[in-house]
Length: 380
Image (cartoon, rainbow, N blue to C red; front, side):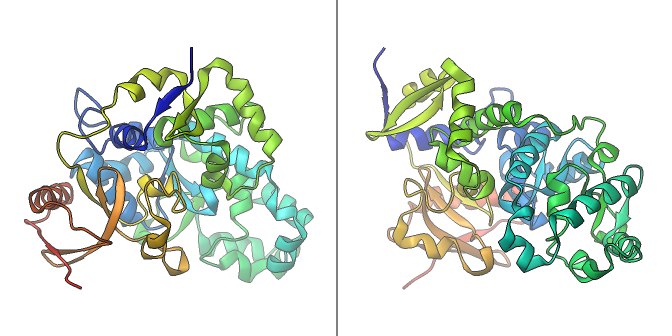
């Protein structure tokens, strides 16, 4: 069998369906929020409202409440995962991602120790102490910091432990002893993953976690190369030999394809669906996606097939902010902002067809259960 040759248009239309943005992803209606989060291999939840919008656009206006309930009931975990940012993940995907991120042991690198002031030995002691503290309890950030600061081993780290950035807590999450828990009043609170979720499987061996997570990634954001998977997961902190080992372990479940002539990896089970995807859509597919949407975070803002390099700074802004997106046929062609009932779209170049933009605004209004929104195109 020769190499499967695909076009970028086919790949983007396939991703839209796989990510439940275009019709055809599920014949029996939208997925449950847990199934959606699993399909996306996690939803960034650094900004909770952004995660809720991403889910609502794919499942409907009941999505945000269902997302909060799934977290409260332990069917989802909220923890520091991909790229060190907070994500909502199903327990198994969370365990796989954390095992891989933790395997890089970034907290043992001299630059990390110099910047944050905790030695590898102190982090190891924190893992043991916090794992015991949270094994059957939920503690707010203030409560956890107070208990740890009373221990002479950790008193010098009190300021870092209290930081809202969670720098010293991230290595604990990556080693499977801490995750976020719902707390009264919206305060940050933590517990052990096993206490939060009856489905927590514990951290698996890296050689099992890697092939599973790579499969999940390619199922939503493929075809793609191993470097893109690594950038999505850990900002390229895994060794190339380790990544190649994950691919080798999948054997014939992976196939090398070409996308406009460039090689990429795809799951073999998806080849027929990819190849059957029409190159030209019957009508423009226009979406208004929220900030920090997984559609762009999965491949990354450097993925020029969805975001031209010349417009990257319009999407990837200062302090790590990712703008709300105008999507046309799977490509990011602008940004938008909302002021009351008006959505102002700023296209990079050509504005999308007016009728398609109105439909996207109606979809956004329906997803968020708000009164009708009016979309307007910003003038230069």
